[in-house]
Image (cartoon, rainbow over all chains, first blue to last red; front, top):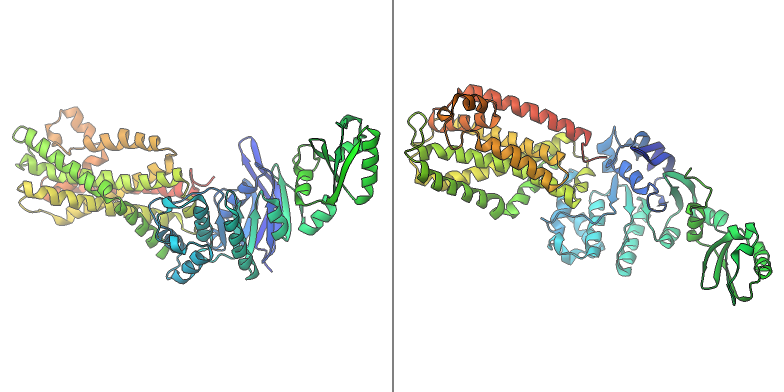
Amino acid sequence: MTPAIQVNQLVKQYSELTALNQVSFEVKQGEFFGLLGPNGAGKTTLISILAGLARATSGTARVMGFDVQKDYPQARRALGVVPQELSFDPFFTVHETLKWQSGYFGIKNNQAWIDELLEHLGLTDKADVNMRALSGGMKRRVLVAQALVHRPKVIILDEPTAGVDVELRQSLWAFISRLHREGHTIILTTHYLEEAEQLCERIAILKKGEVVALDRTSTLLQQLAGVRLVVKTHNELNLDALPAEIQAMNTQNANKRHNFTLNNASQVEQVLASVRMAGGELEDVLVSQADLEDVFVKLVSPTSLVGGK
Amino acid sequence: MYATWTLFLKEIRRFWKVGVQTVAAPVMTAFLYLLIFGHALSGRAPSLGGVEYTAFLVPGLIMMSVLQNAFANASSSLIQSKVMGNMVFLLLTPLRPIQIFIAYVGAAIVRGVVVGLGVLLCTVWFVDMNGISHVVWMLVFLLLGSALLGVMGLLAGIWAEKFDQLATFQNFIIMPATFLSGVFYSIHSLPNFWQKATHLNPFFYMIDGFRYGFFGVSDVNPWLSLGMVGVALVLVSALTLVLLARGYKMRY
């Protein structure tokens, strides 16, 4: 089956800056795929190339088998993008905005689908309200509706829940999950890693324009997350007195609470012994399964040796 | 085809929603020009082929309003979309450069013609026009002139990244070229050097050709004007289409 997204050795150079460096991956049809990375990692550049908003310096990108440059009309018909920026046309109402967007894709008589979108995104009572008069959350809902108005097979959501309330976030995910169940391919970028962990079947992590991890979410968690150990001490712990390999596991320290990310549970005793040896008086110990945030920190932290050469 | 039609309609709806600013205001301005210049210069300014000065002013003012508003429609729409960030919704669609070109220029022509009709309706009662000599010539120059300025507006909107860059284009190119094109005078009243200089201004041919449609008299042969305007339209359109196809200052 043709991949929903196919990116091959993609390079994007902005004068001195390499925004994307030989990025290659595929997203299967019907997948819920996460694209994660810190600010400036190249996520939005990659999305812009797929959407035709930017041009790759070299390499190819395809949407549902259509080259985003050579076959751009077909590629853009197959793709719906929810942009990160809250932008709108201040001259028009919500309904007019969706009607125009629908028309740009050559779709006549799209009223039934527009009504359905308005209903599912809680916009029915705002249909005749000018875009200027909407709150930020409501504008975000219109952006989602605009991206879906031509019923694209592949939907890219670039931080769709940034700055929106819990209610919208839940209703948005319910709607997106429904679209996913109906066979749409979803590509998500988000800073809310718990969202990505819950929703995405596979995740790619970008760092400085390179893919540093690409696997099933469960595999990433299994292989990279390991175990999180939180040690609280009565006294100030001299971290320099810890052996180098234990220091490497230490991810965060605040108020005498010291976080360690371990490869497996068998290392717990080794860390506790090292803390005691360094003069730490244990007050409390918490052991838990690490989550995607730990994987993310491990891969994209400045000290990580993975990628971003 | 429907996609082009949608963008064309949207651009018309956009200016019509602020019709006081985009249609009524330029009609009012042209009417004031007629009152003030007609009163101040009537009987003093040399006329063209026996046409009374106030009547002479009317086609010039109509065409000036048509040209300025055709330019403003395309350029302001594009720069607003760029600055507000909503240009992205157009760029994400399968619309081809030629479709974007036709829709924007088509809407610019509509606004130019609507404003031109408004100026005609407001001014025609105050002057003795003695009918229109060549309706076809008048319509040809009306459409070609508004199309050329619509394309120039599109070009300026593509090039500009900020409102002040667009204002520079408008105030230092469009406005002087329009005012120095014979709207308020016949170029035969100018010194020889300035007569020759005016022949380098494409705006002169649009206004002179349009005036020929009204009175059957003009400073230069209307076929020459038609040729000059046609060549300018083809050249500017070709440049604009190339820039649109390359995504110049729009797709990075």
